[in-house]
Image (cartoon, rainbow, N blue to C red; front, side, top):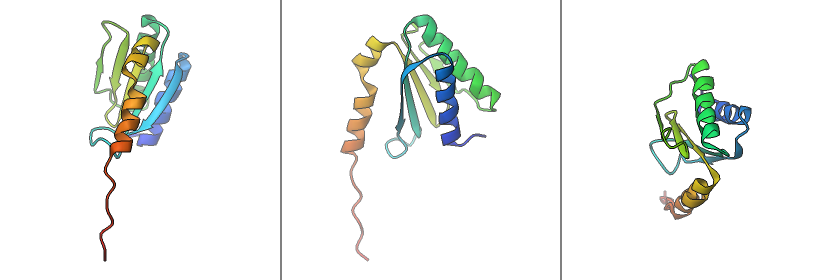
Length: 120
């Protein structure tokens, strides 16, 4: 079983194999109990989004990891690959610009309450 960091690196490598662009990794470990990393990548066509999702699934399965789910393959504009603690969003540029997940999650990071230090 891969660590979160190894899984993240394997996903990025699989995305780079099929020429994904604008690959972004967001550490969500302190923002969500459901997953630790979100990886967002752009694809130029529906065919490429599907090829990227397929390559991520194949490469991770080769390393002994389980793909828990895949969503969005019918439209091919935005495909989500659920790898447990790592979520992969493969999006066409217009969809990515519209939803702007990077900004949404950076705002969540900024809004996260700071824990006050307890006096000893």
